[in-house]
Length: 345
Figure (cartoon, rainbow, N blue to C red):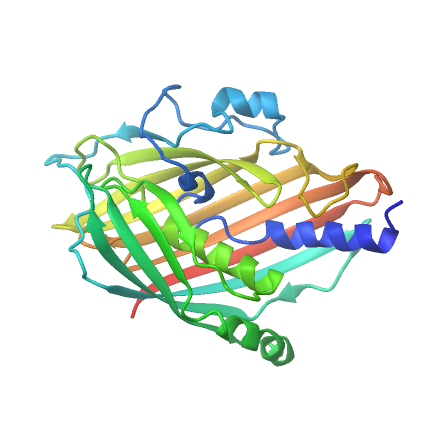
C-alpha cells in the first residue's frame, strides 16, 4: 500500500507541475517536438465549449489526435497590401534575449485554504545562433543558456538563496533544434547535465519548451495588417494531455518588424494524469480546468525569437485522487498566475 504522506506529496507535485507556463508569447511547445505540417484537416482549428474544461480521450481525438500535427488556419487575410510572412535569419548572426518568469499560486485542500505563494522571479539570459540551412530551407539553431538567476521579492530571500546555486549551475547548457521558415520546430535536443538533480533537469526542460514556443507559427497565405490566424496543437508533458488553440492577430507591420497579439484557449484532452513516478494503480483526476492567456510580441523576421514580448496566463484546477491509497473526497484546488516577459539584451 502506498503511504498517505507519499500520496500527498504526489498530488502536490502534480499541482506544482500544472502551474508551469505552457506558453510564452505563443502556442504551447511540446507538440513541436515532432515533425509538423501546416494543414487544416478539420477546417476549424477551434476548441469546443466545455463547462468543466475537460474532455475524455475519445472526444479529444476527434479534434486532434494525440499524434496529430499542428494545424494552422487563416481566419482573416487582413487589409491589403498582403504579403508572405517567413523567417529569414542570417547564418551566424547571434541574438541575445532575456526571459523573466513570475509565478503566483493559491491552493485549497479539502475546502481549506493553504498559504498563498508568490515565487522568486526566474531570469534567463539566452543566446541564439542559426548555423546551417538545409535544402528545404529549415535552419539548425544552436541556443545557449548564458545565465540563470533567481531574484528575491516579497520577503522570499530565503527561498531565492536556497535555489539560486542549483539554478546558476545550469549556465552554459545548450539546446539545438531545427525550425522552418514558417516557424515549425522539430528535432529538439537538450544537452545532458552530468549529475543534474531532478529539479535542475525539470527547469532545463521547461526553459527549452519556453524558448522554442516563442517562435510564432506563421500562415501559408499572404496576409496584411489585421490578419487573424489560429494554431491548434495537442501537448503531452509530465502526464498531462492538453489541447490548445492560439489565435494571433497582426496588429501592425513595418518591413520585417511585426506586432502580434495572441489569445490562448486550452482544454484537458484527458481527465486522468499519470506519471512514471506514480504507482501503477494510482492517478490524479482532473475534475475542472479553466485557462486564459493573452500576450503580445514584437517580431523581427530576420531573427528567430521576439525582440520583446509579454504574456499573462491564469489557470484554475480542481484535482482529485483515484486508485490505490487515494482519498477521492479530498480535493485539491489550485489557482495560478504566470507572467512571462521577453526583452532584447
